[in-house]
Image (cartoon, rainbow, N blue to C red):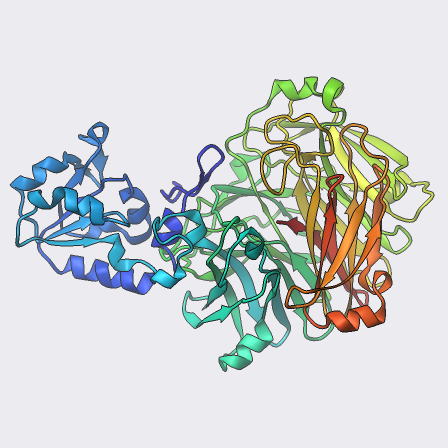
Length: 634
């Protein structure tokens, strides 16, 4: 059974309640409150906003000496809550509990309404007794405003072999936020807090960089692997914390990059690849809550075969981390099989790490598997108006240097078939190959090595697009996903990334597509963030201009180079042909003098007001290291 918390719903949006109750800053105070309630003889609970289930999921209220549960909503009278029949709050007058626990934040008004019902000897406590400090609040008038909980988790490690660097910028200032700061809690694999601190981010567009080496030195820490909890204080415009995460070998063996963790725990994740013959896949179980994950809760099965489901057999403490060798639960799986994860809302979008027999590593993330989508028969009829409609695009890196492999990944629980065709385009927008993949079954193992297509291109790189093939099948839900794997032909080092489809560059809209960075569809502009590495790597970007229907012949793309304080120091522009792409390196596009002026922790904003581009950021190192993942915008 999933953890009974409300997280994110595509109809109602984000719920901040579980973030508020499970916030690491508040956990010690909450445990103290629970301990004090357990020490009295009689506790009554007033649940005016139907929040008891979420609180109980994280702190086990059943263990308290609860005599009565009261509600405000008439429709909830008689409902079973924690094994007790909910009573109308007006019945409180007949009771004299030692403590009345009001399960609400901003509770003064609610308490004032019922004071006439409360015995003078009854103590009243509310969730306001365990709230964050007032200076954490973006909107102090509404504690559960999602902007008050712009939080996220990040995989974070520093040991003798590797370090971690989280990189983002103060994009909230662009929405009018002032006095931004970041509160952080570094938590080890046992769920123990190693360090907590707060940093001011005074400048608009200023970079926010957390380097595990610097943090380890600052707090005199031993080696650690765990989680970094990040809370942006004073956020406006966005209640999400987006970041790029680099994991780098201290021995110059590898570099690896992943996207942000998606701060809402989900029931299911998918797109976890099984190991190849010379590999081990480590799935990082990282608990996002203060309550433990009981042994036998988290499940894994081969995609499309629920009969293979096996459960992870160890407890994971609150906020704890466990490195699970995939073969511990599914000993016989092998690439290109895919694994489905029954997460039951215990963790945010998880990382996995692949280690080969030369101890070269790469890290990527699984994706949320949607439970709210079903096949949509209208999608098959969109082609007359929307052309290609939904497109999943990914780079083809220079073919003489890199091998490119693509694997479609089911990412909807109801998806039994996936009718796809793969089209390949060179950098100039010429279609250079097409391959029907047929009507793939949920349990398919159909990966495509682009070497087998013998691409004949006028350029050395380009991009691939998965779109629906309605000649092969009619089942479509708009959520095409794929895993893309890249290998340096000389060094053998690899990177991989996964993402989903969108409708691109058409004026017509369908549901929320083409998606926009701000406001409703259609999204016909670009605002992408490119983080840059240090002098020991070459930072690159692969931009693609997918078009669902004929659109502008060329993009009108500007690149703005910013220093770590958010100040623009240089700019240049690109023109990418429709259905084309451009691969460019930081050190080729901006001069040495411009790069020197930008300095350390610089970044580039990619803007285009004429079309919607999609991009991937990456790095290469002298020894053939490679990292790659999709970019984000704000």
